[in-house]
Image (cartoon, rainbow, N blue to C red; front, side, top):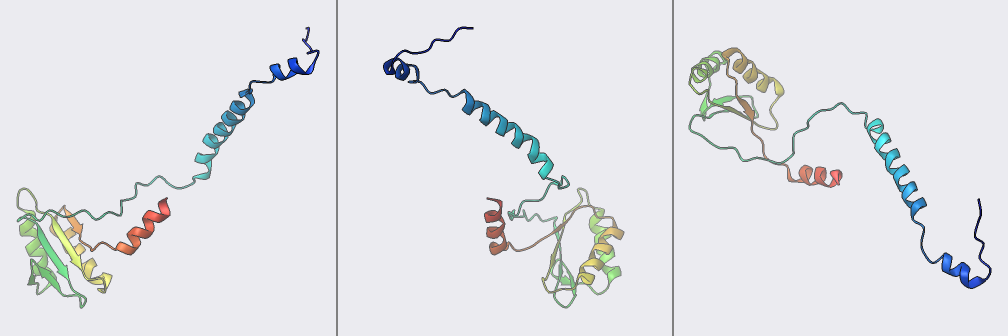
Length: 151
């Protein structure tokens, strides 16, 4: 194999006037392949679809039922007080028989004990109502914090 060796400085400068990008492309491809291989290995989380932190306005329909639980644990059915757990179950059974079945929206005070909300959920389960939603106020500070942490 023969090699062409330049004789003087002018020929040497003429030969080196173009940039050889092949090594740069090779290195970049190797780095890309390394990143593509190592990113799934680093991500060791279980695949779970997390809900978005954006508050979606609920559509208030006449067939929607609201159950409120105040800080003292008192339960209200469509703004009227409920005397006992059995009365709540009876009200939910009547709502569950409607076609289409209405949504039950639970509005619980943030200071209420979970025990009171658990009783409401137990009544819903016993009565057979399928569509249940928890209503909440959007927390602007935590929403802004979660958005900044994602970026």
